[in-house]
Amino acid sequence: MNRTAWRIAVIGAGPVGLALALHGARLLPQARFTVYDGRPAGRDVGGDARTLALAEGSVMLLRRLGAWDPARAAAITSVHVSQMPPSPGAPQVLIDAAAMAVPQLGAVLAYGALVAPLQRAWLAQVADEP
Image 1 (cartoon, rainbow, N blue to C red):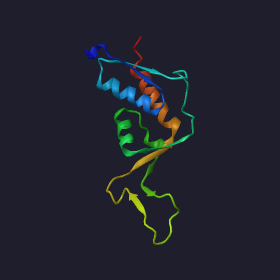
Image 2: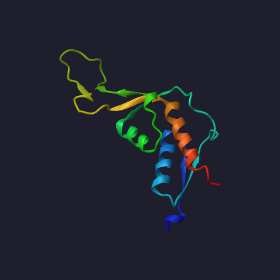
Image 3: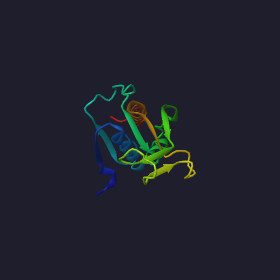
Image 4: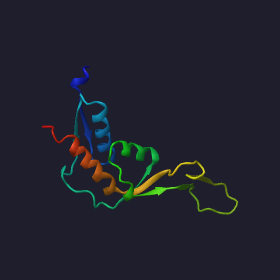
């Protein structure tokens, strides 16, 4: 199939859909991406306070996409992996950013603080499209 003929539909304008569309449009400039969602494209989602935790790999991708605002996120610097409350002597899995010599393991932020910059970046990306 000729890559210039590719038409790619992304269903859902949440964080994953918008990041996929942005990244894909940059990697495949000859393809045509269309994002479909139930909410109007111009609706402001910046105030959506639902909380998301992102792995550092996701944060790195969002930085590359120009859709990361570190001022609106809190760094995850340690993780305790367990299904039980800690008790003395019980086995534990602790992951610590300092022990791994990295600044953070990921970040926590509001849904709106993540989706609003992605939405702005996508709308800017397709501003000249029909």
